Length: 303
Ligand code: UTP
Image (tube, rainbow, N blue to C red):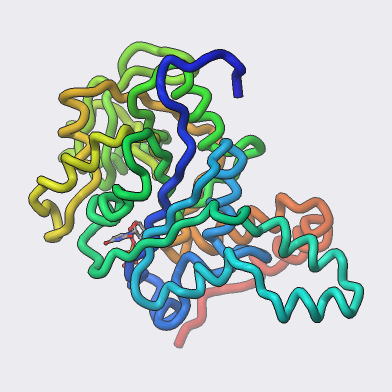
């Protein structure tokens, strides 16, 4: 992060909307929130919180729903377990637990009583965020990168102010499935967003850059979301809110060059497990030849 004095408010708080139903992962997510499914040795949500922390975020706001209490427990002390580990001299295990623990008073949990959409979940955080810009990280998207996608976005924001969204390239024939940005002039390692369109008809997308799960937003988004009618699927959509906000404020894009895994889908989740296992030198050495052998020999089951 640069030391220069900012002409706009810094990003200190992050929102993690974790109130979705996770239907694509049933039955695994019947009793376990999808954010608590494990990629190698950590729950998905921990990767995302670590990314926010690396970006200098000081306060972590979780918008939870029913059956999500275990997320709160994960970011709390586990006194009995720690006591037992101490008695047994398991310092390494204690260090692992300490690493994952946010500081006292650094977390807030609020409830979205009904899953009325991502835009509604973000709006539920309005009183905790107050009148300042905030980071929004979709917790089922893991971004694998040495520095962290949000750190890179904060760099852009510190130069540009306004709103910043992460984008990624997809094949042109895939654009109709996503929110797409229209790319303007380059600025501060990012670019000016000239327009956004949600799920454009095939062949009409202004670019192949999708909006990919990380945002820095100004608090004016809350008033817009409050007055917004529900959109696609009867849910309050964040993209609709951002389109309104873009009429009165600037949006900037940042193109993430690392790997993104959509852990809300089975394929993305499995790829994330492989990618993080292969990122670990020791594990990669042992696993890579075995995985290669497995992939070469296994065939889909016929029954
Ligand atoms: P998704 O649509 O991917 O999540 O929302 P979902 O509804 O949990 O999953 P499926 O489609 O049923 O499998 C993207 C993010 O927004 C959150 C989700 O928790 C997820 O992290 N979300 C979505 C909410 O917090 N509240 C909502 O009402 C909807």
